[in-house]
Image (spheres, rainbow over the protein chains, first blue to last red):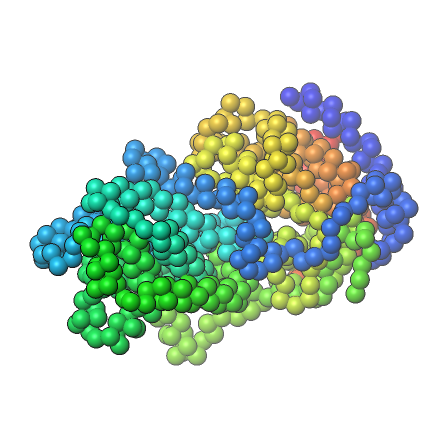
Length: 335
Length: 263
């Protein structure tokens, strides 16, 4: 080992030494743009960088994240692999958690408090749970994502929106199998799907993806400055569970609180996403889907859905404006 | 202002200010405010620094602790943006300021190589092409497929170093690069750095070791309290920071000894 090290060192030493001497001799004080750079050394002329002079910091904005798709893919994979490594049940935990919540809601609200007014209550709850869980996971993990990756953030010039976005993709990855479970359950209940099912599901997912990413981006930066924000997020996520028609049917909101309140209620994009997923799955399992859709869902659900998707996209744009303001201080505050 | 095609790094009137906060909780801040004490102050880590670097130059950045060397390096690396002025670079930047950054203890060495290379901006194909070289350089042998969390600190550092030096870059940044590893590895690193230099890439080398600066660099920048105090030839620069004086002489020799330079 030492032998080889010795020989290579000896081999490169004289060449490097003379090169350094020659270049040192030609270089004038404070004249960085001297002619020597081109005339003096052949190797410099041979080495030309085919790139523009540009600021080294990554361009801001979420599109920059998708320009680094390969890194994003690896980060998402790392997150998925590491989240459950060292645990015996591994990835199963991401199903046990929502399933346990499902069991609680089903037993307490379905069996004990007797919500027989809702047909196929289990499916009704599960539809909501998928959406809510996706949102909460993204919001929670995204908020912590920059602090958690501080070794990377402080040393490498990667776009920092990368981390909340990858948290969202990790959560999205977990949605897939939950949808499969839901489809199976629906099948058991006798599901009659219609062609609009994928449209409704995709619209719901798009709403949550944009909204949750927007919130995760803002709170991930805020969390760098004050860790209090991750506690704020826990409280907010608790509210989310009860502000959507998951454990109670939407009909109750309109019946008991009036149409005006119901309108404001539907301005919550998460509520619309839940209703869209229920429109896709739960409605099809009831005995008379057409009647259910008429009585249980708002008549202009699609309008609300598309409008709220636009709202979520606007939120995402705003989030980036805020993030850009905070971003410059992140490396120094991240201790 | 425009620059010729051969310009590699431009630093133009760059200033960077940091805010020092003395209190963090709401209670502490309000108590301090009531007493009329300052809750924060600012200091300039870099103050109106300007210079340009040609492609292929190797710059030694010297200065006392806290003189702004690392701040300047993070600005060139793009982690931070300057408050005033601008920094421009040409081509891909890699370096030893981020060795092992983003290593995940629960992933294997192999997975971490890919991740770390991606962080440095390499594509999957480029990493595939360089993979054997990286593994060879790190010489971690059969540990390649075990979790990085179980590595010794030396192996960890070697793996990080191996990835960093094998990234295809145009500008190479090194911050106290040779503080890791055992003697044979250090020698290997120095050889590799010289190879990088001789390939025509721009090198930005931060060091207190006059010996290795003299060997590696052909121009020295000296920072003093955030200002550029000296920009010129190596020997003068080393004299400027007084690292060459008699009291520090043994230090330098020790360093040369350590780097195994048998001149």
